[in-house]
Image (cartoon, rainbow, N blue to C red; front, side):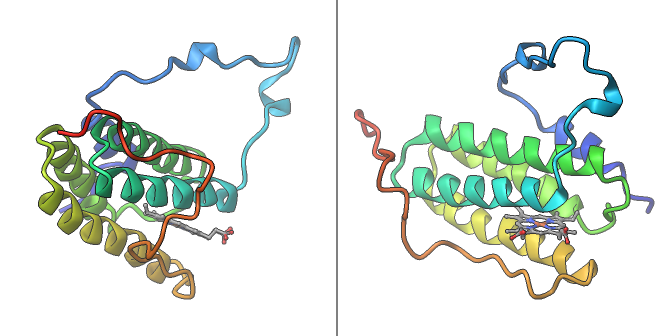
Length: 158
Ligand code: HEC
């Protein structure tokens, strides 16, 4: 089976509204060539933070924040796929479907499913790294929450 484009797969699971891209301001007179193209490693570093905050929010049962972080993570991956066409799409089908299962777990406020799917999602990150000669970049479920300047507990817990 030929893999569908990564971005299409990820966009297909897009449910909730995001901040419109029209809010982004280009410097006056900036041409496309002058627009800033983030390095893949920087997009991935953002994905790493979103992956971590997603875990912190989900384990705190802060579902609106978890949904937000999952959307940001998905957008980082879409951005990576759109800007870096050379990255493989063959092994990311799992990742896109995992994001969709994760969205469902969050919608249903289901901590067990969330935790289980987080492992699948993380495996998807590592599978791509391995296939791209980056097997030394290994993600795992966070052991602790280092963002002491952000509150992850929601005020009204379910
Ligand atoms: C489709 C392929 C692919 C997927 C999926 C992917 N990555 Fe990456 N990632 C890469 C590549 C390629 C690099 C190395 C970039 C470079 O060498 O400039 C990388 C690098 C990284 C780095 C190292 C950044 C740094 O410079 O320190 C982190 C962290 C990372 N990815 C996190 C993630 C997380 C978290 C996920 C899953 C949510 C993920 N990646 C999914 C391809 C992928």
